[in-house]
Length: 371
Image (cartoon, rainbow, N blue to C red; front, top):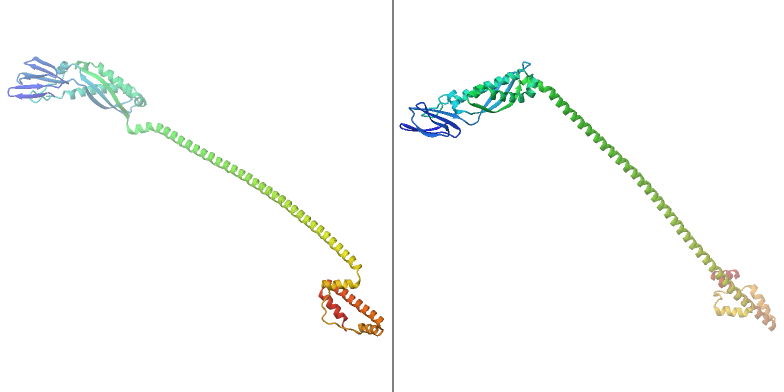
């Protein structure tokens, strides 16, 4: 919108760079162009302001397809005024010289015209398409048809209007029909999803089975190795017991051999000692055999081999021969003294023999001699 400043009887207009202003003074063209700024008198001036920037016109309309189905088309048309002078003569772009506002609604008129022209082209195209074609291929077809139809339309060319672009945003059927059309695809998608779910479950089951089989194989392998370990331990224990038994047998045999050798050595020593003792005794007895009784008795007394005599019992058997010898005379006395010495010698020999048997033997001799 142009800026108009009023100073008593004269006014000043300043337009934007995107608006084309035509100034007629007394029916003659005084100013014509974009971004104008000039003084004018409201009483003899006629002003028109035409926008020359790109404008967008949204479209939303219903159409019917070849199979009598209702569809909704949503599109946008981009246009601009290519010939402002021609547009200002065909449409009312006049502005109030006091306020700078349009006296009419030229843009609404132009938008209505674009909507009708675009709708007519789109309806003609939809009438030859089925609902499925309109929903699947309608957007591209409608964009090409509307773009070419609006650019070739003579009414827009005669108004100085140029169409820059046409965009079809959506082509949609009624909600229940759209749901019905979406059902097969939705079912297919659901089937694909179910198939993927089943395959995923089957794969999970297969993986679980593989894991279970691996665990079972591991357990079997562990059991087999454990069996081998137990067998090896048994073999080791048997080998250890065999080695221990063999070592014990060897040690026992060695100990028995040592004891046998010791016994044999002891027996040999005892035999040698006994033989030596027997030889000594034999030599001693041989030596004693060559001596007389008196010498033997003297030696026994010297060696202290005679037993202690505590009580002497004289029996008639001993006294009678003594008395007989005493009465016989000197010769008899000599015989008696030899007899007494022989008795004493016998007693000494008996004492010597008794000394080998101990004191108990002497006591037995004395008790045997008592009455």
